[in-house]
Image (cartoon, rainbow, N blue to C red; front, top):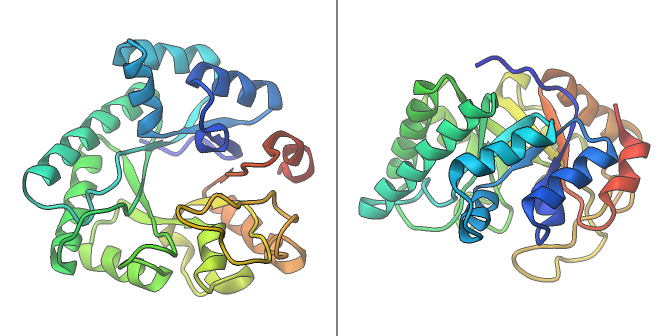
Length: 258
């Protein structure tokens, strides 16, 4: 499926406790170009009694494109019955992406324990599943993950998987916390980068796990000032960028839209 979206999308985690219809309405009113949906957005709607079809209708009614479709985390290092369950959910998420004309699946690493060889095989299998729907898959590392705690480890896993439709999700927060601030990703070929998430980082240690101390771009440790911001814009020219900001996402939009 071709990539049709370029712009600024709101990650629903930004307004995490807001019901999906409220999050969609807020994103629309604030002028975002699209939204990124998480698997938990669907699950919370299911818990309220909505069917999967009803959730899709809710998203369509908003008039906002979906820039990336999240899956349930944990499949990378999963094994056995849990792996099969997670890949079943993965397929359901792919079906929803196709239904919403979204060409990109998104996943963090998540929990579970398996060998690196099994993780590589799981990434390869995930790429095959996404590819069977005509989709690409972008994978994100978290600096606090016990195994995939930096960009180099994730790049190696994806390279070993050898799936052309699997690439990197670069989260500016985790780049900063993981030792690659500012221009720290300039050695990464653009072809490997499928998606970018951006928010700024306080000039202080993280308060705990999971980290919930993200700041608007330009309000933290200087990640989006001067040349660092230019780096992010170059990535945006090749792919998709969205903002994850827990503090004031709508005010920042007017300052950083491009």
